[in-house]
Length: 321
Image (cartoon, rainbow, N blue to C red):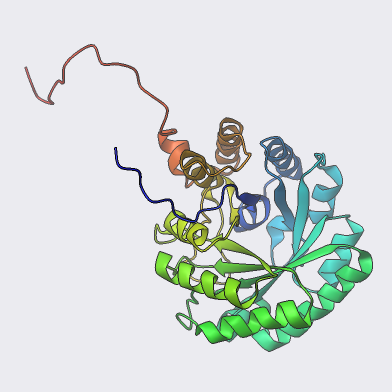
């Protein structure tokens, strides 16, 4: 048997679970707070080390997450798990600090069109605000990260020039002092070649920064794009249990890559996630029951190692007498 050449994949990756925020925010029927708390607690017991639990956004903007303070107050904080929250502005950051989040996550749209749709301001204005949020977090002693939405494709402007993405990352790292940067395929426009070349270039330009990928599966390329990220040396990915998610300000955006699909693929490849897939699949079933749907291949078909058992009879063709 000829041994295949080993690709430069990481030995282990960190998966950040964003379903309680990115996934739940898209549901039309309000998910009761006690259900959110129960699901977050269950996710905490799967081996996940990062969970984006909610967003401190104005209730009129995202009604589904109007219980952010109560969720953070009621969850059982498992040792070793980082519980983060997305914040849109300084007021959201103040609320997050008061709720004792472990990390504040900021998102800035890389394109002006999406930024105007999402935040009613240009990207430059959003970056200025992100700098103020970062300063507020440092003053409070709370870790802060930034993610760039539509960096790998915008539904209004198409594929952005790499130079624009690089310049935004430079502002985040060199001006705002942020050490971790997320690059997002907000509407699932990206392809593996684009993901790999972009992330390789960013890692060369900013060797001290920690990069993560936030991928959506709108056109079925989510896991392929994750693998391209691994090829580029990325070892941190966002994913959403049961494949929930989307973007309320981006037409056509569908769910994130399903956490259980990503974990299944990575573990089958020998890339460690430290997440118990059986426990994660049980939570995915609970999420499906709570919201009434799921976009998860492994939840639907089972794992690759789930055998049906040996056949005792030959094939019977349909219609045979």
